[in-house]
Amino acid sequence: MKKILFLLIVSLVFSSCSDDDETTEITNLRVNHYKTTTNGFFFGGLGVALLVEEGNQIGQNNFTPTFNGINNFDYELGSTYDLRVSKTILPNPPQDASNIRIDLIEIISKTLVSPDTEFKVRLTQNHTNGTFNNWVFVNPDNDYSIINSSIEIICENLCDELSTKINNQEQLTGVFVHGNTNEYILKEILNE
Image 1 (spheres, rainbow, N blue to C red):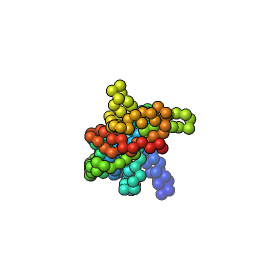
Image 2: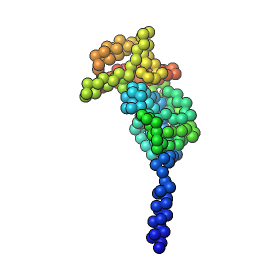
Image 3: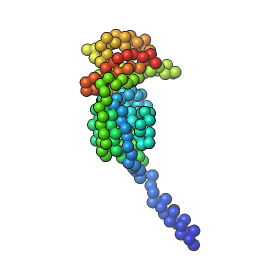
Image 4: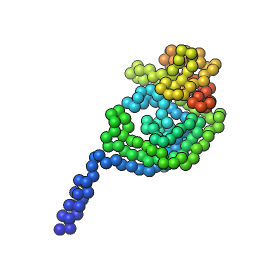
């Protein structure tokens, strides 16, 4: 009789759980001081993404791009953040959208990096299928920026070299430091 009662209770518990239930967990994130380029997979094409470490990965210097924004978080380039967030797994996300929603609970710390801190960002990429991704946008006034973002590229004496290499469809990574708000200052172009 105890086995039957136990099985009945277990079946009631599982039948009351629905695939429509959201699952939420509280976790910590470290957000890096710069955004990186990404092809976005099916989340909007070429653009930029935050770089994050989560939970016990924090401090491992193994940041990965996240395609999820962080609700109620006002990110500023040039600062590294430690955050407490809630991550909710959505059972029925909108088409072509993430099934994870991240909401800011609190900013634990915000640390401004040194102005001479260098970082690398992919600017172009060749794929084995012949596709060439180019994240550099040049407007008619010859202002450079990262496509689908508000990040301006200050390339000064490297602008002509950058344009030539892009026209030749070379695979490029830029070495940058932070400039003013939403500016990356190009220090070096790497063919990699």
